Structures are given as structure tokens and as C-alpha cells.
Length: 389
Image 1 (tube, rainbow, N blue to C red):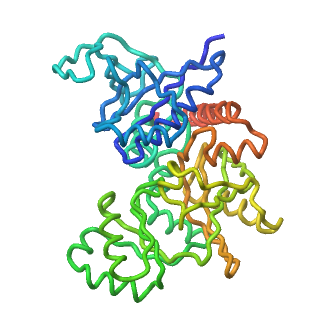
Image 2 (image 1 turned 90 degrees about the vertical axis):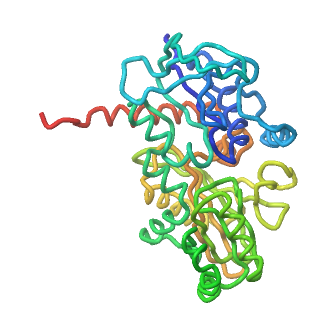
Image 3 (image 1 turned 90 degrees about the horizontal axis):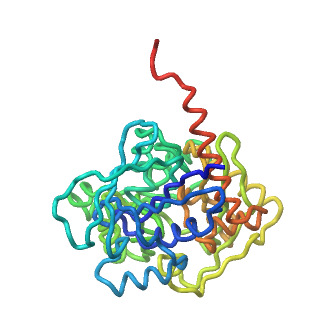
């Protein structure tokens, strides 16, 4: 039987590049070699695409991040590499064009084509901008190639916390009070913006880049000085910043969603973070944080969270998969929808995979299900008319 050729795309021009390497290593390692042929495709930090001679093998995000911190650059394949170009138009089999091998540090301007490679389906394992935000999904749509996960709209909305909150509120889903700060307004009238935030919101606050994941650039602030500094930090990563009220004594809860037209929701899980909140270090470097799956909730709370997860998935027009995050106050019992991650962390110990494992779907079966969903959605789209004739 012909194996399905799966292009696993990872890396990317994002501060979440290293996390993506660990996710890709897990996917490549656990794809059934009798059913699938994994093609590792690295998007380097400078934006170039390469076929990886040595695909990522470390599934521990902490190890990958520590290696990156000890080097000036960790951007993908080492030694010799083959640059590839993705053809952004439909073709029978010619999807990637391959350039000659050359040393890593050599860029002699050679652009000769030495071969082509067809892909049956693409599995993006990209976190953050230029990968999870609809950009790569748009490229794959132009090429008319099946791909795992959310489409262009859901990817873009899921990445943009400010726009996602508008859709969540429009769907009647509870969200925390917040203010969106644009770079232009901040530069023109920072003092007035701080006054506006303090008028509308009560400390403590969280300050977040609108378009980023893995808790990069997030600060918890307790006064005006910290708020000003937090906005400056967040604006190093994005032109738009979300400032929101902290949920009192918040429990961090998560659900996995899987499906296209009729999404299924996993059991809920809870993050028990060692730090003040679940920041980048807590997620990937500091191993003191733990999780409880299933979360210790009442039957009513579990039903509410699972229903809200499906509602959030539908609100952004999600397909394929998502991890939906919630905040539950120990003080008043109020539950808030936090965000939807359309390409969650994908190692075997990431919450998304652990949630589905606890729901009866082990990691290799999860990968198969996601590929099947991608092919199913693509097949349905092929029946749509592209001409009035």
C-alpha cells in the first residue's frame, strides 16, 4: 500500500521557534512508518524553507530551548541543507522545488532546481506568527494541498487575542474585562492611555502581546509603573497589546477539541503552576509545574467547560483541532474563556496530547485522526465550484 506522504512543517520566524522543534520531533517520531512517510521541512529563522537532513529528534522543549540559549542561532538543519520553495498554485504532484545541497554558511546565489517533491498532506507544527496565524495556511490554500488544523480565518482569529474576544463576546461566551492598546495610540498619548486603562480596569492586570503564544511577552502588573513597563515589553513582540483584569485566585483549565463539522471535546485538565502564573519558563523550562487530568471539577462545571470549549471552537470557525483555555476563580466561582490555540504544543507530554490520551485517544491515533480530518475537509472543498460555467 502506498504510504501517505506527510510534510511536517516546523520552526518558523517566531519567538516560539524552539518550541516548534520539540513538537515536530514528537510528530515525526510517532507517525506510523507503515502508513506515513514523514518529510521534515524546516522554516528557518530567516524565513527560508529547507528539507532537514537531520530532522529534530529532541521532544523535550526544555532541552531545545536550553540548547538555543547556549548558541547564537538555532534555526534548523545543520551541516548541508537543501533549500526548498513551496509552489503556491495547484499542481498534480509538484509541490516543493528542491535546490542543490550546499554548506550551511554558503549562500552563493545558486538557484538551480534539482528536483521536485509531492506531498499528500501538510502537518504544520508552527507556533506563533508566520505559521499559526493564517499565513502558512493561506499558502497551502493557494497550493490546494490538504493540511492539518484550522483554516485561514480561524488561525488568524485564534492568534489575535483582541479579535478573538470580540467573537467570543458576540457568541455569549464570558471573557474578562480588557482594553486593547495600539502602538500608534501608545506612542501619541501614553499617559492618557494609562489613565484610560486605570479608569476601566482594576489591578492586578495582565499585559499580553495580542498575536503571540507560549506566554511570550506577558507581564502581571500591580501598579501604573509596572503597567507602563509591561506595555513596553509586550510591544517588543507585537504592535497591539491586550491589557486585562486578573481573575482572582484563578485556576487554569484546558480542554482539547477535535473535529470539523461536529467537534468532540476532551476531558478538562488543570495546570498547577509553580510560578505566579503559567509563563514561558513554567511551560517549557521549569519542570516544577504539574497538571491534573481530569481536573477536579463538579459534573456541572465539567459540562459547562466542555460546552464552552465547543462554542469557542465554533465561534472562530475552527476545524481540525484546538486547545481551549479557561480561568476559573476560586474566589467567586466565575468561569471565563481565556483563548483558543489552533496549533497547541504538540509533544507527547503537552497538555493537548495528554488530554486526548486521558479521553481514550493515544498520541499515534491522535495524529492519524488529525490527518484524516485534514483529508476529509479538503475532499469536501474540492466539490465546490470555482467557475460559473
